[in-house]
Amino acid sequence: MKEKKYEFTYTVYDDISELPEEDQWLLNEAREVTSNAYAPYSNFQVGAVARMANGEIVAGSNQENASFPVGLCAERVLLASISSLFPKVPIDKIAVSYKSEHQISDHPISPCGICRQSLQEFESRVKKPVQLILGGMTGPVYVIDSASRLLPLAFTSEELR
Ligand code: THU
Image (cartoon, rainbow, N blue to C red):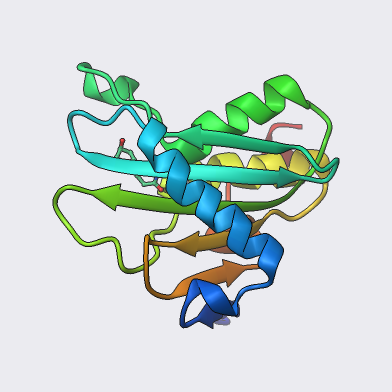
């Protein structure tokens, strides 16, 4: 018998102003894109914006539905757009932000379990890590070097070969 330990390191910035300028811009775009969310049921609006390896910028926001399970998170809306527009281009980084009628947006949120699975598959498909920049409208910002770090022991395409 042996025990294994999983740990990862991520960076916490006290404020957006501590980020490199390019990343500040991306996070501010994510903040703006929250306004494109269709979230009348949760009133929780999420924006996700990617900087692609080819320099393109692609945005996504959560899109809900009266049939609740039909709704999609901003991250998966974004990944679906990217895979349709630029199927083979790696993503350098994704910034995610949110606003809500019910709480102050002063801390980062991190992707839900389904989105972690989608991000993991994207990374392994294009063989390049996706950096995540997570922040609210104000407050600290988390930078994670690879989205897959959020999904240890993931179920992957390797199992289906
Ligand atoms: N949501 C996202 O879009 N991304 C996340 O990382 C967490 C949750 C959405 C799903 C739903 O429309 C709303 O936020 C409330 O869960």
